[in-house]
Length: 125
Image 1: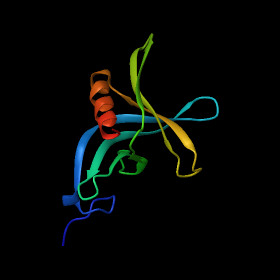
Image 2: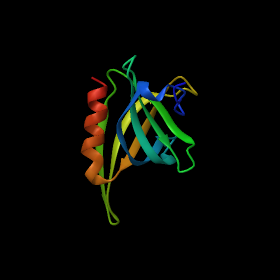
Image 3: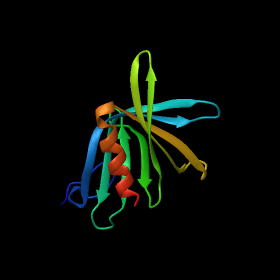
């Protein structure tokens, strides 16, 4: 029998398009709250062509699991602070808990910002 991935899809049907370390932040009522960190993977389900982003912590627990939908907008954000430069990709997505739109930021190393942004932008076209 085919091996199943953690997402419950046969592993030979899933292609990993990008894999990198990231922190995820979600906009709360007044500020950005960190809600996880770990390995971010961008997947494509080959038969359906649907794509998703999944972030798991070091224990393998899912911190973020969102579909990448047509028309999503991804914005590069660069913050220069005394501690150095922090870089993010900011976007809105449907929040399963509320059904409304939630705002997220993925923090990555500056040298990975363009790669993450361009990958996500292409998948939303």
